[in-house]
Amino acid sequence: MSKSFPSPFKPIDSLKLTFNHIKIWYTAGMGFFTDAYDLLIIGYILATIEDSYKYAGITMPGFTSYLVGSNSVFWNGLLASIALWAAIVGQLLFGFLGDYWGRKKVYGVEATLLSLGAFLSAFSPSLVWLIIFRFIMGVGIGGDYPISATIMSEYANVKDRGKLIGLVFSNQALGSLAAAAVGIISAVVLPPDIAWRVMAGIGAIPAATVIYLRRKVPETPRYSLLANGNAEEAKNAAHFLGGDIEAQQPVVAKRMSVSEILSKYGTLLIGTAIPWFILDIAFYGTGLYSSPVIAPIFGSPFPSGHTTLSLSAFQGDLAYALFLGAVPYLVGFPGYFTAVALLDKLGRKTIQIQGFVMMMVLYLAVAGVMVISSGKVTFLIPASAAFLLYSLSFFFIDFGPNTTTFVIPAEVYPVRFRTTGHGISAASGKLGAAITTYLFPSLLASLGIKNLLIMLAIVSIIGALLTFFFIPETKNKALEEVAKEELTTTTPTTNK
Image 1 (cartoon, helix red, strand yellow):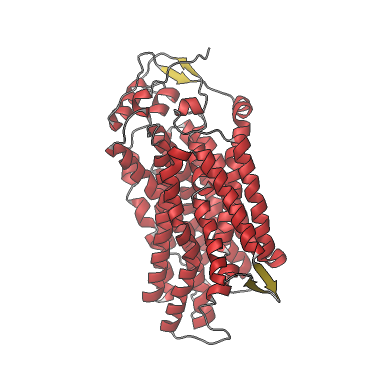
Image 2 (cartoon, one colour):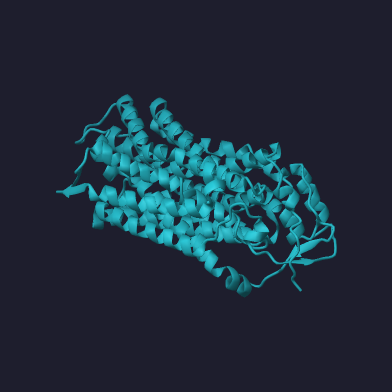
């Protein structure tokens, strides 16, 4: 019979930050550095291949015929989104395996897939092979979400848990900057047919540096004790941090059937999955298709008409075009670290609600000052001011649900369902991203950018309401308290 027991993890929950906390952060974070790099660099790769043909007359055998041919819309959409669809597979698969086999047994496998897929992408002989290799990479990207988030949450102390999980995710900000830098520099100094391969291949390096470290991270104290019933393993993991656990009376977490899990955590799953779905619709939609707002302000970097540029002129224009595409992510960069600084002070729920509300306000503000005339976009206020409003939405996306939707699912579910719950939530987000990648071009054509911003404002307030009603505040609470974990005594064991 399940009873309430004092938490055996108080010693590690009350630890101050240690070097090994930081080591785990780095080990987990490099995956997310690579995740962001590889998901964003594909836009630069597409632009390099397509624009080199359009403006410089450069044909790349095995690639150009697909991306500018009669079925170009299909192939562009498939290449742009294949890693997102694969990430959904990885999130669900590794989420399940992380609870079934344990975090340690699968940790490092996802980084290996990620690095291998990125490396092979650089040597793709044709577009079809590039799609296959990016699918492999995408499975690794997806697998990184539930495993890295949960390992960090289960090792973290209570006081700094939000900060540490948020720091793992904030490596995406650094990965975004790296993608912009590598894309722009490659475009300037390398011929286009080599530049895109360098862009793809460099994505393999960061994740490759942590594969060994991930294989060496001990199983988490919580999974060792509460899922495995292995007090010795749990103590060894706690000693890795410089702490201990109180396991004089060994306990395990109650096993629950699927129906019990859904009954107890079903509404919570709505609260962690649907806002992430909504967030990624806005994040990927406004990020990938921001040109209707940016173009009236900065203009097109390429000449109008059918002028064929010299290679050097094309490289300069391409680098400028890639920079413009990166501007929204650059503005959002400080938002990640603002969230990290305040997660354990303001709380996850408060930050997520204010982020969604500010997204709604800014989308409506930009739509309100936007004028569409003869298919052209102008503004009632200076274009630079309109661009500032638009860019601020990226700050509040990152200082808001882009960070918190990653943090919260790593805290609110019980130990036997933690990576599965996080994986389902993350997969919901990537489903929103994948759908957005396909549908936004047609929605832009049918609705126009102004109505699309109004639609995003509506879904943003839905995200705020779902957060308010379905998400608990988790700051300064032990994981077992947040998840309402039911513990029962067990006979000590050293093996699962």
